[in-house]
Image (cartoon, rainbow, N blue to C red):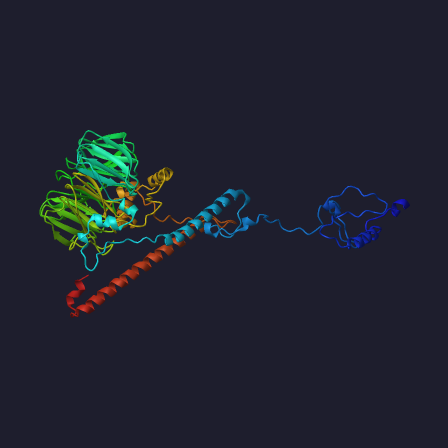
Length: 597
């Protein structure tokens, strides 16, 4: 027992050794010197120990309680703190994602990273949109004469000499008298041009670079031609049936249900191809699924005058009795009928805002109508020979083809109707006009006539700035494919075509109430009625049958009181209205008033 008492104990013989070590520790150490472990006298220096073993614990008092765990701990004993999330990025507040300021758990690290990427992309997009506003510095220009000079006397040769080389190259003439007359159509981006001749000649080209895409002869009369949603597909109304070709001239489809087609119109946001035929039928073909959505019998004879309203996708048809009818695939009857001319209608055109409609008839009159509910003519002009073809530009210019002469009228701006008093430009062609269209996003007018195709320069006709995500003239093949997928996902159903697209956002209260009544009659009860009160069970013997019945009766009495209170208020209001009415009349009370109830 005595030997065991002489054994050294912690806290008695160790402190002198620690004091010695502490005196050596006070020696300053430079940053280039390596840290060495102090050894006892006479002991050979061993291999370098780990830093965790070299750390010196502070001197403890004699009576300090030393835990066994502190001898083997890797770090000095410190009081424990609640464990925190070590990743500083996880404590960021995702207020933009609607998650509040609470940190995300570890299991949703992927979701967190996706949200961060989405936020970064959104911020980058907003910055790019703000910067792009500075890039939209293009402004539409117009042709102005010197000292009251009439701009209608300026010919195309003078304009070509005045503009730059790139713009002058946009004016050209295609001499195709052998296969004329021609109908033409520009793609939505304004980069490609397709034209078809009455004797079967069909061609498509990139008219900016003059690169030919395809050229075929269908050996049949071509009555109209249209690009579909992109320049890769082409619809040709031939003498007998409707045919679909690709940009290489290969026939993809022959739609025999659309026969004797005279005019074509394509609705880009609905993917609908509207056809007007000699038999008097207006047919809507969904090109995304290849099915006919509607076939409407107009009952007005041959249909050879057709145009679309770009604002609401309503089809305007001109008839031989001088009326213009407005059609939608959702209705079997016309949405409206407008009496425009004393004779038959020869041409119809609607501007890009859907506000104004221009018509020309056999009475040699050119009229502009307001389509904002009044359908009244705003201006009228009598032409010497009458206009056989009409077209509006993106900036509101109106062009009319009269024989072999093309007249263009301009207004005060895009939202104002064109003034018919004085023509803006005049040009004479080598043959009678057979088709007109302004090129999108370009100051160019394409004219198809019996001698071929002519591209005219019309300053101020096109929109100077285009949306690169919607109609990009410089898009690649990959961008076009991605745009097609996006457009198909955002396709508007044909049932939503109506005169006023803003009515789609309103609630039809009458139809809602009628549907509710039919549902009640079909089910035998009102599913939206208030459910009867069911008291919740309570513990400790308070859920007896008598207490449940008492609570139910209390709620029923409260509801009954509310109903009685409301009926009394209504009776008082009616009585006050009667008294006010009697005072307003000022008549004497009669003994017979007691019988009037």
